[in-house]
Length: 349
Image (tube, rainbow, N blue to C red; front, top):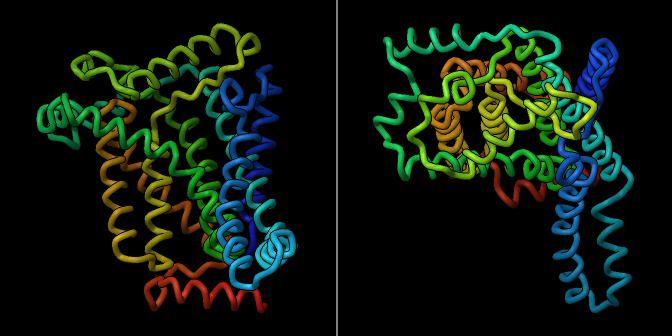
């Protein structure tokens, strides 16, 4: 396979696509766009990237018109030629395609899980939680300590924020890192998260506390999170009733938490490239809140969180190996001037 570029991400995407095709054929299951019932993924992801491209080009276009006193069209051509040459376009397209294929394969493989096995490990995972928490249920402890009022809304807000985090980071990695190894590292690391995560789903299939023991969350108020949990359960029921009769995709699986895994990966990448301290600190605070919210709201067991930390770290190590990115922190903190210097160096090369 070699090292460098998006070779690792492409290999992961290809392997997951083959696995999806094999499982779908073996169990007579459809391959769906995971977001086809709302905005299809093949529309949503390119739209996000194109928006990031516009945010990259338009301010420079306006500045060029004012600075060079030229017409709008010549200024736009100059900015696009400078910012979006063939190498940069290839970098973005290849990264986006690998991301899309891996994501679609991940969601479909996750959806096939109840057709492949009816074994669930929720009882064992709940028992492990109580062992680690000295006989107590983690979610119950959090409800007692934090209460079930404002905390439920805060945790739901964290969950909503996370939904937008991944596509936003994709846009940053593919557009604003300027075909750097950092962009390659992040896209590849998230792909490895999906690969390892779906493998663990098949090894330890589970539903999560909110579905296996919903009585423990009856006191929580109705929030956005409540609607999402009900929607996912409805999708699962519809898919199990007839996978060819619905456009929905079954997406319930608990062990391990990929919310936690991808958040940890993101924080570790920020540490490696030495983003400003306030960015790194904010990232780790958000990671901590993600761990709390996913247990508090019943999405995951506490051991799912621990599994997510391991997966997020392992995914980064594998991505660093396949991209050739050194697993050590940069000697200097990221600055705007430093970023511009590195960008000029990359353009010159």
